[in-house]
Length: 133
Image (cartoon, rainbow, N blue to C red; front, side, top):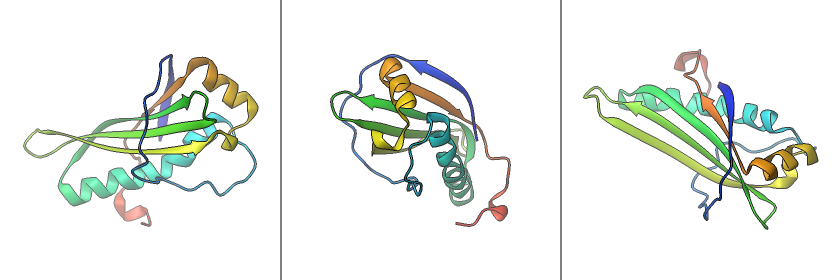
């Protein structure tokens, strides 16, 4: 689940696609918050799987959408911060690049204007037993 939106101006360097968190099934363009909602369930699955697999405690996370200038693309990055039983911090990160065609014109204009939109990732409200992998 995501809470509060933080808009930050800034530039983006090249992003490598390392993991596809989800696939867009809907062809018609969507709003930015709807795109964030698409990542919510996948993020919950990743968090719960990491917690089960590595005896980790989820602390916080971020979902970031960056507009990539002159490319008609959106860089998407999810960052998950955990602590293990020894108190050590562990960061898990996934990145991918999407076509800007997934967003409505209004959403694209918003993202072009601010360059970056960040959603905070909250801990899942469900347990791993309730999620199908």
